[in-house]
Length: 355
Image 1 (cartoon, helix red, strand yellow):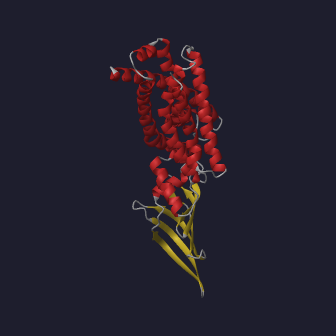
Image 2 (cartoon, one colour):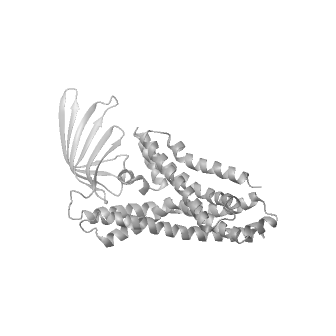
Image 3 (tube, helix red, strand yellow):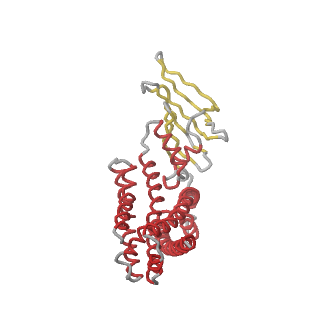
């Protein structure tokens, strides 16, 4: 009997959450299309805009899932309460804690779905969408294709003037320092790239070495260098944090810390993603507390309104704290987990008040 009821509750919650998520994605997607249509140029026209927004929908779904889980759970459980099905379950001997455990199973299922989207589906599609958008907008402007960047590899600083998606670069500057942070040499290669073995191929390299007894200039038509910065790390340095998987974030954070570079932006994204994923487990339990409370005899409109208010409050608090943490250099673990912890405390308090 318990298994049947658990499956019934899960089916109800998942179905209403899916419907709410579709509506939210339709609204957010519409706003994204309108915003992108104001920024069309080159080959980036309406068909490409629609493709770009469609490819970004999984990442948008990841961000919207906690709100959709709360509103969907409120609507689903509220409909059951309106039909007195929740009352019948309580009369059959199911305690509030037992019901909370049942709806939490739905949250665990959504957690798995959210984790899969946030790790394997959303980031790679978002990265592909942004690369496609860049190429379509600047197809005939080679100077705008690719990105200039600085990277650090131990005592070596590299300035890459242009990086394409195939990791073919324009000219590259290398600045080598010794252990006392004194400049040892400056080098420039007219062209460079990374081969399949992650070796750096430098063409027409000219290096100026500063020595105690003078300056030495060395030239080479082709030079092969081996740096810790490989194609994966270089790609991570160019991608926005939300376009990286959790594994990519961890690898890049480790690289930044080993080179004494600021990793706060990527740490904030990692903990933000973890807290956002975990929060979907709490939402159905919080919805159950509302259903037992003042919304027990309320209308579907009332349940929808309270779900929108609480969901937006959580979403805005998460975004505000995450951004503020980067601006004011606050602990990324604390600022990103604080909304979820507050939500958990509210849920425990609300469930505890139910008799």
